[in-house]
Amino acid sequence: MKHPPPEGPGHGNQGRRHRRGGLAAAAALVTVSGLLAACSANADSGKTTLTWYINPDTGGQAKVAENCSTGDYTITTQVLPQDASQQRIQLARRLAAEDPGIDIMSIDPPYTAEFANAGYLAPIPQELQDTLSKQSFDGATQAATWNDQLVVAPFWSNVQVLWYRKSFVEKAGIDMTQPVTWDQIIDAASENGGKVAVQANKYEGYVVWINALIAGAGGDIVSDTDKGIDASIDIDSEAGDKAAAIIQKLAHSSAAPSDLSVSNEGTAGSTFGSPAGAFLANWTYIWTNYAAQPDVMKDIGYARYPQSVEGEASHPPYGGIGVGVSAYSNHVDQSMQAIECITNPDNQGVNAELTGNMPASAAGYDDPKLHEIYPDDLLTLFQDSLNAATPRSVTPYWSDISGAIQSTWHPPGDVSSNTPADSAKFIDDVLHGRSLL
Image (cartoon, rainbow, N blue to C red; front, side, top):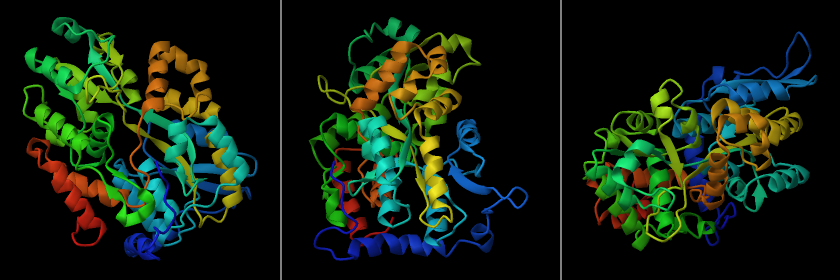
């Protein structure tokens, strides 16, 4: 995937004005209390306090912050909203206002290029870039790169696999040691009273599914992203048609959960844990999600993400978190030292143990506690899936592209053969200011 410069060729500053204008407008909503939210030093000890804005989890990042606090600085955490889009908005507002109260931040991959392009991220020293590149999975490095520079430090790399109920596939007579397709699991669930659980609410998680379906059919949502708003919009393609056909088939089958149009990671997990549970496309944390349901836990199997086209390798969804340093921090050098510690393989393993969000490096998988929690073949599946995963397009305009897709592909019950073409036109109109989200 190509990584565009801050300004697409032939556009002068048009791309930068488009992005910075929207974020600067959002900055007007920042309050004085927000600007003063974080103290730069502990008055009692004289130690610097570094404030790390984290995505919600079950304590992994707080533990890593504790591990990486030193005699010179203490790392404290502030929790961002649950929804990734709201995380982006909150950080963008603060950064557009040049708020020094943010030192370190956990950033969802699709927004990395946007923040880097806007000048919000402090440059990572080349020596640290080299260390991070050597230790990280290729997909993690790709998602953390903008304009040929690593702009955030890969912390954890998530990937989706196909979870299934062993009792159901035995009843349905499916050999899960062989690759399966979306068509096959939808048919099996429909014919045997089961449900296929996915994420199809009007949010980023739905676009993650659409992107994986298109990638699995050999296509892209957009390409040539170095051209900025004039990137090639490829969703209206044979691959886009296949993705639409899969969504349409599930939505109109008896395998569709009743809450399909509002389903997210949590509700999909609940469907899978119910008596109707059959198949679930979801992230790595699912393995530890059913500790209170031992009958479900012992019935869980796992396999590679389903193929969009029979015989063509799937490209599972890639997710994760990169850790960046604010360009407006008063403590950039110390924050860089902190993110080196935060993202070292040992702390990636600590975070994975506590949250179920897997490391961004192979060395992180060496943590002995992970091998106590997860079967070795499942850890191997996670890593193999990461190597095959396809991140969402690295572009400063991903938020606009994603919003346009959500508007045209939702609800899933309305998806038809016309949807890819309709969405391609709307994406183009949004990027060029002819339509508003």
